[in-house]
Image 1: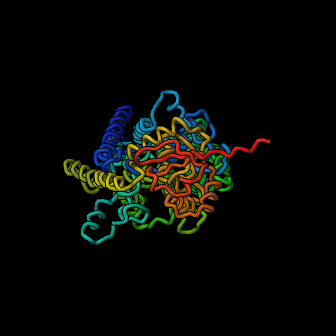
Image 2 (image 1 turned 90 degrees about the horizontal axis):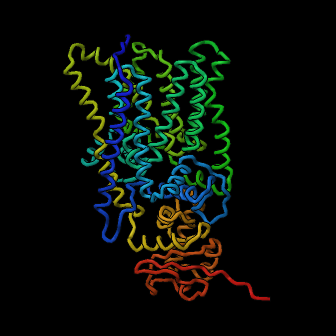
Image 3 (image 1 turned 120 degrees about the horizontal axis):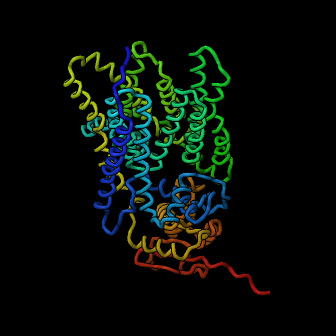
Length: 554
């Protein structure tokens, strides 16, 4: 079947995409307003809906960039760490904070807005390349911006008692698309470190496809440059690119039944550009004595295939349908073949930990998967129209509207579920007394001073002050479980004097952030030890400074 093209104005599609990006940002902003409105008594919202601990960890690097550094160390541990980590996104955000005087929360809001615009407009650019009809392009844009999976249906079953959806967080919740940012809408809502890199990854795909269409070296070179940028923004995608390009080269060689060295070299430019990055990130996350804990403690359990499949929603079903009609809709377009392999590569890597512990990547590797699913699936739209709605234009328009509406049913539920889960997450709120104490730390602590606190407060201190903390993130902080237990026993007074001294000596903090200000609630060894000086207190918080021992005069 041939699909005829209709007159299209690409710039109109791009303007439409920009308007959609602004709309999605505004809609998702409702979650943040709700979080502020329902804050518990005596608490205020930090400014996040979910994933606060991860966002706190980003700011441990962003603040370093704001303070003039271009390479980063791990500031969420007391262990010595050299500056070896580079991230282009965190660097740019930190420099903007320094240059324009942005607060951390304003930076996050602008970052989230940039993520929304970048993702939607990059998707629109790719849709213009891949899909010939205006109806296809606008439909895919609406599916990308507002779509979700079958979480809405699973939530109904959960409400009826047919499924257990009580596990509010985690990869094993049946309503995955109501918990995790599987779809672009959720990525824009929850975390700009998901949405913005998703958009830049689509720019890499667009450049490579343009290279395939024109066979001009400059487009492959641009794709290689975008691949490097992508790797320096989100390292997980380097793995995807290094698997995708060889797979695509193999498929094209089998299809053409020949191998042209010149074409292979041009197509392999993104791969060649990413190999040094892959080696660099292997060193960072597998060899470096401190940063390797990020990967060790960040190991993810396998995601149930059933729940993940259902989370892909109608877009996933349409993608499978498009592939099943390969005889009537042959895969003759290089762009379609590339996007199919992209989706297959992402899904294979995402679920690779079912086969081997060596493939225990973060779920972030699956963030871009919905874009190729939507674009390939909507390629079947003209075929469906001709087969079932021929000469029935009104019925076809109604069917498309119903399809878009059903595809978007999970999005409003995601807003509500995110607020409900966020409200029950302590990291998302702080007492005003804690904010006052953190403000004191920001004014008095140096960048190299270690602050010992709970992991929750450690994350908030990183976000608000950029200070170095001993406990801050479940993956970045080495030996997190042991440290969390020891600090809890330290605060409660369960540690003996000898063990408490050993614990403090191992951390070597300058400041100890205690959740209790009342003298009666402080451990005896803290009250009686002259090495600890109370330097700040209010009705809820006490901050002690550890006095350095002065060597006796000779």
